[in-house]
Amino acid sequence: MKENLQEFVGQKAISVRGNAKTDIEILEGKKLRKIKTFGKQTYLIFGKPIVRIHLLMFGSYSVNEQTKPDKSLRLEIVFEKGKIYFYSCSLKIVDENFLKTIPWEADVLSDEWKPKKAKEKLKEIPETLVCDALLNQDIFAGVGNIIKNEVLFRIGVQPESKVGHLPEKKLNELIREARNYSFDFLKWKKEFVLKKHWLVHNKKFCPKCGEKLIRKHLGETHRRSFYCENDQNLY
DNA sequence: TGCCATGTTAAACT
DNA sequence: GAGTTTAACATGGC
Image 1 (cartoon, rainbow, N blue to C red):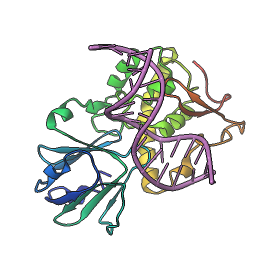
Image 2: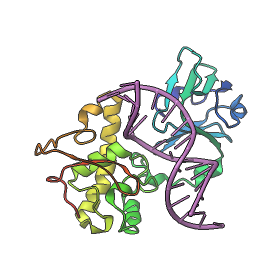
Image 3: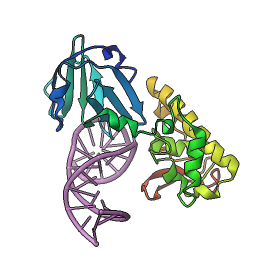
Image 4: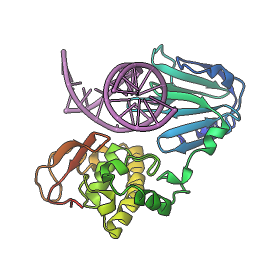
């Protein structure tokens, strides 16, 4: 989204509409200065007002689309050249102080990503299950349920393993693959070949040994886990 | 056709 | 007031 919206940076918002509950009118006449992302959130920085967008499960956006009446249109921004549409998303106006509270180094795709910091945070929660830890946005911002399942399969760790029980080497692998797989995910998503590359998520059989995969809602997050009993060790 | 899910927030409870 | 649970959001795939 950030990349696809770059053409609007530097442009002034002429008009806005949509069913967003916040006061979106204040954006009119303001120039889009910069776009920042933190995990799954996108920040459209219009100087003082900043629009925070999260697409949640079903949200979408489009650029320069032919306007059609749509009751789920959350926000349309008409710029000097072109328009942006956001549908069915979470939208909030925040200010620059809010941005100051964001732990940017926790974003797995960021240049500022700090694996050491992630490790420190994990050391503080030894009793947490790895399936929950990977979904913790304060540690691995951007990682979602698909990435969780694929990372755990790649490193051969059973999702109910406790963070504190992981050998140092596995802990390092967990942190490294959380970032590494996220870049693969992004690349595949851009090429529209994401699903094709799923090894365990939504799959029936283990690609390594052919055995039936376990599919269960696990951890405090109660999210779907897919894993192989043979190829993923419980620590 | 009905159920479920790539996710988070805020309201409603205890 | 703190912590926990539930509802809301709303769409496409199976």
